[in-house]
Image 1 (cartoon, rainbow, N blue to C red):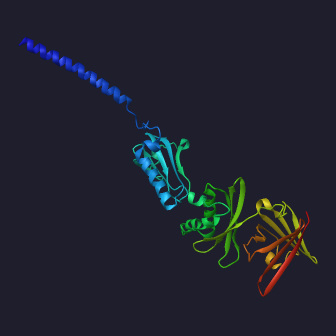
Image 2 (cartoon, helix red, strand yellow):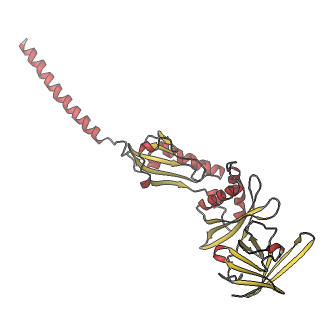
Image 3 (cartoon, helix red, strand yellow):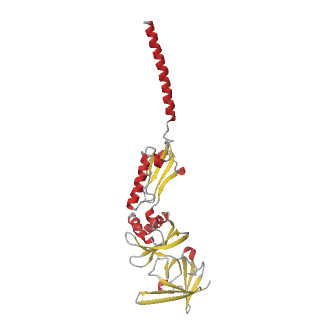
Length: 342
């Protein structure tokens, strides 16, 4: 009986040693397991299946439809480890974003409860981006008119509570946000007095190392609609209008002086006597916007009155002729011959 008890005790002792070793081994292996912070990934775009599926689906849809918004994905740290910030429509108003952990679970969307996660957005790392190729693929001298349906789609989607000027400003900001656009600036607002009126935005982009300038005409309808682009030539030797140059029209003492500021697309108009009515050059003294497109001269007065464009011709470096042909209170053909003063 004593022998049996001894054997049982020996067996129990041996089992205790074995299980202790196993527990230690398991614990050591657990210590080697990755934490959520480490995520155990080399490349999240390939190592995280849920993230790969999102990217693949987005790129596949873009390829099938030929259309996609500007999208970005960032990797950053937050209070519980590593997470991912998904902005799947960067330029869309109030589109917001979603923030997910390594498992793909959505922790917050937009600004909803995101502040409590202590997301380190200042040190976020861009890991994927798809630009809006649909728009930028047409931004060149041959195809730029093909962006018009895309522009109109943006205009149609603007909130109804914006007034027309705010919509025009939103369009300029949206154009400027496109990665292929150097700049987009409102040249004039309600400046061409057709029915409905027309506003203009100057758009610039790089093409083979040269900056190209185009004017986009916008019909101020509801919703606003783009009409067409015009090539805009910056003042140069073809249009010898220098900074601060003064040009004078003198008709037997009735004088109009135009002072140009090409760097700002501004022109100051002064008349003597001040009440001189020159019809389309408008009476009085004022500072307005102007631009030259091919052989056309556009300008905007402070009260945004504009009836049509003028034809501009340079007879020499110091002689400029502005001529209007149209029907206003009968047939009108008005010609102003300006001589450069400075």
